[in-house]
Image 1 (cartoon, rainbow, N blue to C red):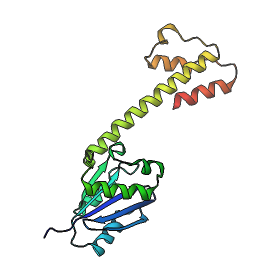
Image 2: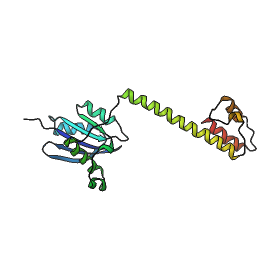
Image 3: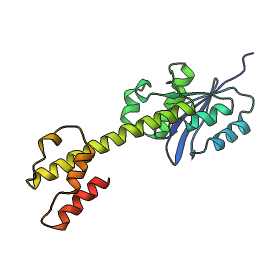
Image 4: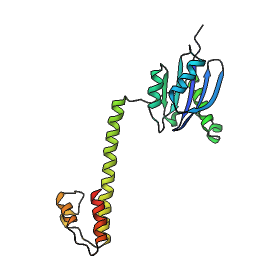
Length: 195
């Protein structure tokens, strides 16, 4: 006789999870719980100790933290692209966390779901570093544009050698040495330059 399996669909949110649990033979329960993987692992160990577990959740703000902790418990975990999850028209119209997790559990049991690639922690943190670099570059471009816009607003002409995308020390020195009629204009520019 084949060992029964457990299928768990989780709607992961920052503060709480909606969880739907099914077996090969019956639908067990749908409930809300705190967003703590250990609590779910404890519940499953208490009620379904001998069952192999498959679970899934949509990629969200919590990304891979649940994946790592549930995988350590020996569970087969899939992180899903939300657009790859089959949903009925009824599920789209009556959207809720409980309906989502029930649908996830049913789709998981039917074998219709495939997960996305989950990077290791080192790779994930390296990606974070690249994202931070890109974010900082965007912030810098925006600030430089604001500085040039402020100069234009006050009728201060950029020297021809500075009127390009390059931002040199010489240009920063020139900006710092600009004469303003009132100290508030200088303060506004200095604040942007500090950032």
